[in-house]
Image: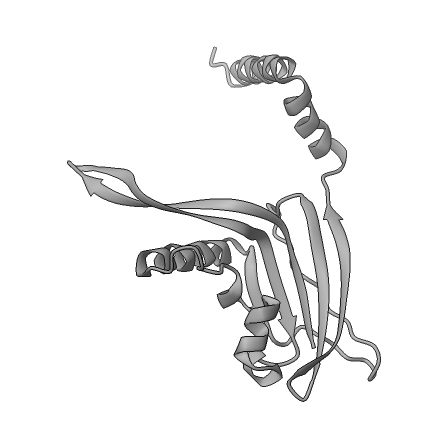
Length: 188
């Protein structure tokens, strides 16, 4: 059994910095289309024990299948794809775990995903794959949406809907905080 949470899908450009005349500048880049911003996979066993690698790749299961390097399959492009996956893993946005699915009975399972605080908002997909003897026996998919709520959403909406008013309020808050700090910590 594999449970996968992924989304939202985006286009990503990765860049590599090189030293040029004593400065670090972006020199090379690669763009990947249809890359999930978040990818978390839970399985009851290592993927190689559940199905053949070709089947897993066809289903898009596993970190190695996130970015299909099909446009120009060069060593440099593979390096960019590897770096993108490594960076997202370091951020906690990509991971695989093989001990997170609980099975209280033969017909019920349970798992929970760790979502970092900076997980992107948007549309996600929860997919469940059931393998039997290396073959896909069942599949289910359920959409999920991650949104902001409360004060965080209010501030986000204000910054998008009325950027000039948002900027003015932020400046006034900064001036008031500076003045208040000067009053509190004044040396007489």
